[in-house]
Length: 508
Ligand SMILES: [Zn+2]
Image (cartoon, rainbow, N blue to C red; front, side, top):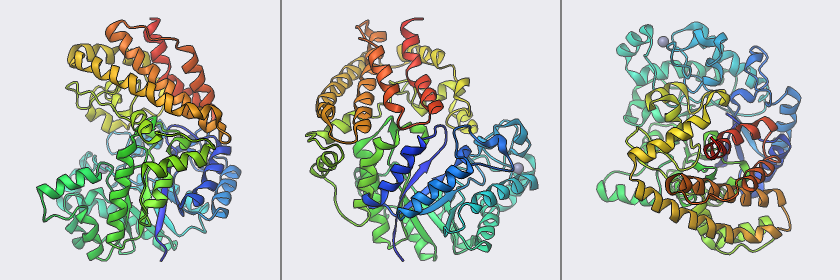
């Protein structure tokens, strides 16, 4: 069977511009990608629950057209419907609040509530109707950390244990899909600590386990080998293989804030691709998560790298320069290092459960909105409605926390260093002003780099009094650059999250 070389598209929070999205999927096969994992969230035209449809989501006609274009380009499509956790797009609505595992947990359904199970079955059936010709279906199931929070489930969970309870719940949907002639996929994190338990539970053998790890890089793998030379990296993939299950590796190719962390995401993809090849397993799907706010074109190099690394080719800075030259028609020497700078995910430890980032807002900073990491886990990465985030107040609070709890001199020195690196990256990107094609994508790169530089300058202004420079040009430039790639409300959502607090902090 042909190996899966896939990318994941997460439609949570913001909706890509639909015209661009079609262009994007049509480009994937040319970059070596044969599969699209499509996580609809609230962008699917649900009939039974029309209130779940985001106004910018697909209409039925748009979705038919989009899927036809993707299939015509040669892509296999795997739809994804969450079946246990990460269901806040639905459960945050008052109409469905009775299906929650606990009243204050809008992310997870109660698996022992027949109405909740029927609700998920309806979602699956509706999505299946658009995917009759596709052979696989992803049931999600990751990070079901609130299993057993309700009194009914507590006893049920204590009797069976966490893994068995999860398998009973997910096994039901897996069998439903098998009856419909589809292969079910599930995220594998429930088995991380005890992968051998898979031998003792009744998960249908046709289920494909999607083994995810977004932190592992060649450096971390080497360190782990030094500490535990007898333990195979990603040993669980071998255990699944030995127990007769198929597995798909899932790294993450957009980990970061606005721009992917460059060498981290490439290294993560490389390690996972090597493991899947060594185990002769089903393939790899590189995940992209909406919470990182990386616009689709900004992750194209990582997508192209996935297409190379899966069949065992290498990637080098020279290949990256070649890729950019082909994209934009101009030479961009030094691009690899510039992308490393722009993608740096600067985390400042401040004694909260999560580090803060220096820009407003990385998803980690949402700990400030929710008050604690535990509450953030219950509610989801962001609230369903971005409008409920007091972005200006949070940015002020963040500055106060940095002044109070961080090593301020250290933060200032790193911010200055980062500003200098962003400035150098902008010099490297300068040839994009003369791009001969993909002008919109070239403009987006320049706008993101200018905006990141602005964000660090505003931070420096608040910490040192240094002049932040003109805000208007980088902010209006970013908005204009996002327009071709996101639907209009999604542009405004992001601008509110990213730009508004910077302005407000300077003009209180
Ligand atoms: Zn329950």
